[in-house]
Image 1 (cartoon, rainbow, N blue to C red):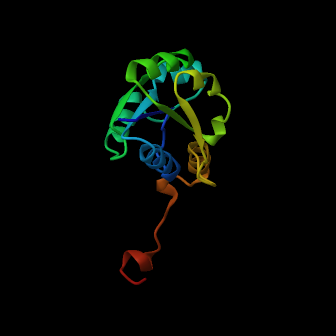
Image 2: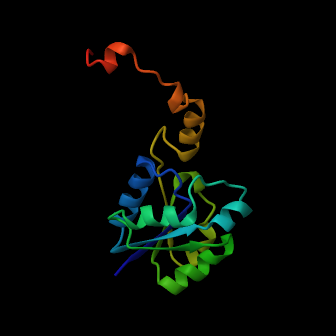
Amino acid sequence: MALVLTYGTFDLLHVGHVNLLQRARALGDRLVVGLSSDAFNALKRKHATQPYADREAVLRAIRYVDDVFPEESWEQKADDVRRLGASLLVMGSDWSGRFDHLAGHCAVRYLPRTENVSSTRLKVASRRAPPPEALVLSPAYIGGAR
């Protein structure tokens, strides 16, 4: 049974995340996700909009994901591979080369990112959007005429 392992923050889940998880799961029999903890994100100077528990609940609801555990440090990956018996580590291509040192423990593969989508882009776009109270409906729309 081939176990595939991947890592990430998975904040503001989007189609790029789903594509990565689906493609990673297709490469093995099980997919396990190391989800960056809030403390680890703080060490990385990364701010997730959702707390760990919420991000974990969303990941567990995705049919491609078999299990989720907290990622607490960069260094834990080799131990995770051994502990879980992972045969493949999969990461997005934006991490190309960064985890090649794990090739002595399991195969390492970088999958292409989904074009034009990222959590960072979503965060920036949401900052530009007008607040909900600024969206005013015309009287014609409210009255039913469209």
